Length: 104
Image 1 (cartoon, rainbow, N blue to C red):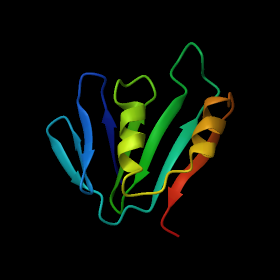
Image 2: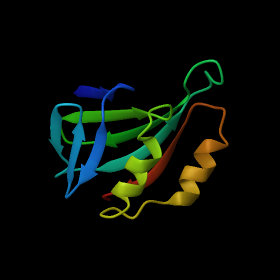
Image 3: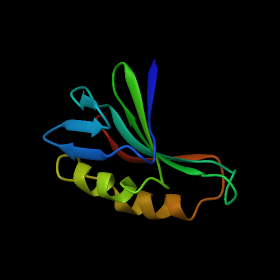
């Protein structure tokens, strides 16, 4: 499975089931889950990541990326994001997964 990681210099935008990361334009057809994954590596290292699970790809956006929260808010237009899970993830200092949306 390919993993696409948005670097801080790449623009991340979402509209109409399409996610643009830099020059890549990804269809979110078949999206199975939107998660926040946390690690126990903070605060020295980045420890919070937005992760989108597609059939053949994983997309990762770090919480330090300028578009992190904007991407979550844009995804909420088409996928009902569980903001209680977003809040819980921001309080977590352990290795954990928080499901913001799931297809099943």
